[in-house]
Length: 193
Ligand code: GRF
Image 1: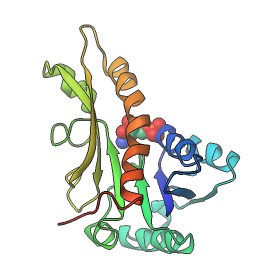
Image 2: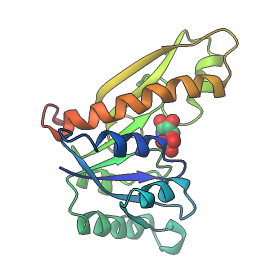
Image 3: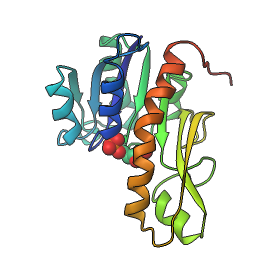
Image 4: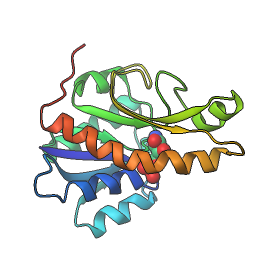
């Protein structure tokens, strides 16, 4: 299966997907990486791996819909079966998410449905939560609301800051995302609304 990864920044989850997809028996190939920020460091990594990249700035479009239509044309030109959001920091319209429903997944750094949105680790720590983690889920119109495919848990330790917790969760993200994409691309998991 052909997969595009959508990023906005560092791209460490993207890198984990690219590395996993090198295994001969992995059921997906990362054929393109898109960023809404031309300066995203992850783009360099993708290019160094010989993967096609594309960028579009939403500010150069009149509307979110025009931006997304241009994005969809890029994804269609890559003939992708699935898209993986990996630190993609733009909210997508219901038109876009419905178009890709069942084909688009995201990784979120919390144990959804807890802590949707931003600053997940700081919020978990200030609530005195004992556990944190990450979730790979289908992308649906509601932000961070689609059905979960896989989760991984980590303990929150005394003295954790948002940064130390994020680092502990990130290690798990890099293992979880390739597993979840493999489940989807192999047909072991399918979306049902
Ligand atoms: C990850 O923590 C991901 O869960 C969140 O944004 C971060 C992206 O990191 N959505 P990276 O760009 O994959 O390194």
